[in-house]
Image 1 (cartoon, chains in turn brown, red):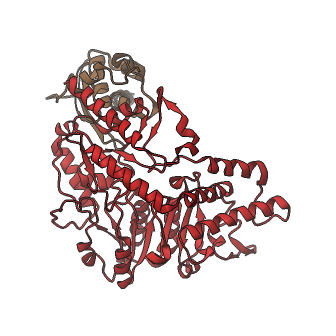
Image 2 (image 1 turned 90 degrees about the horizontal axis):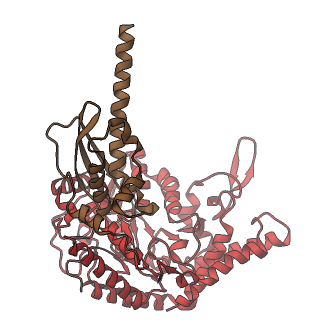
Image 3 (image 1 turned 135 degrees about the horizontal axis):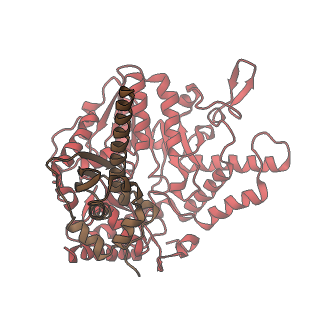
Length: 137
Length: 446
């Protein structure tokens, strides 16, 4: 029997990387998974167009915490534009696990939160730029 | 005791024999039910009540026989007091939006309990909001437990305030309780007298809790409610097929059943209502079958129970439900209850072997059925369920459609074992072994 709970998952669950708060985050986002009671708050610091630092505070199941933990490693120094390309499979690869449909939401809680907040940032900036361009015109 | 009759139990999951411990979600189906449904489609399928031809006559007879079967099963006085619905949820909604819509006025009170399934909570919430009525809740007896799960520890503050908020939003009238052993997870009847007032129009509660397993003292509650002029709806979704039900002896005004939780097909449920109430209630849905005559601008309603069965019914499912009840009768409801009680006692006794395992609900097999929600230290419920799945042990993790109750219990989620007629001590043993494995797995790594 190949066990679903690899040592890597348990390690990231019990010793989550980048766990905590950022003092001066550029972005803060909070995501809930009311079905399981998972909750995560993510703090992101952006320098120029790159994610310089990401920290998170969370409570939830081992899978959601471990997923957030590896995600925090994946995104460091990634450009804001490339965040949308990160997929569930990237987390699965790192955790050496394939989840079934029922547990997908645990694995993607942090990922979706980061994607959404970064996407909002990009949208806001584009609309701001548009407004300033319109004003100039 | 009867697992040879359940073909699905022969399946192997992850290479291991299946230990199905999620019967509170839905029960597995015996061969006779599967046969009845498939035989209906193979031999008798036609629409009911309209056709003159042989097939339609047969289908009508089978459908109405199912109604008679249900009537006898719950000891209703009249067959027209049995309304087929899509499930217990629809049965409750039917009462809420017909009787409730007509009788609940501004300032009225609807009395529920803290252990209700969302299906017996949310419809009443919507009605109360619409009518300006007030929801009240009979509290459960529960000693406050500190949240000592590791995954809750990190933001203990948030968890406790969110639990508190839930309670506030719920307007629960909680009394300071000191719970004696053996009463944990039971309704606090001492507060009932205070909660029921002349404004209370209906008391709606679960016969058996789908989280705590508690068998509620419904006979007593019904007496008190009636003395105060309130009607009583019992949600029997978790009781049907587990304990004998006698609606006349109970003297409840409404009773609901869920077919698929009592070894029958999905998509079929029952609303029992006393004739005097059903008669005075307006239809729930409008369309075919439920009319007597229709003009361009007006229509009149069919007799009971057809007034409440608009559209083509779930005929095959009703036929399947009849087969399920026949199956239950052949085993005997008392024997079924006995089997579940014994197995529940065994499960509780074995669960006590695991240090730190916390059972929510009555700790003793008295006053409870085999629905056992629990947490174990260090292993979050969802992870536990995933690990058990790899052992072929099927349990549920989550809030089991009772979010406010979990807030009250101080946990976001629990894992839940629930027993059926086919479960054996062996299933419990497998479950216990797998839980022990999970605990060691999570321990070794820390």
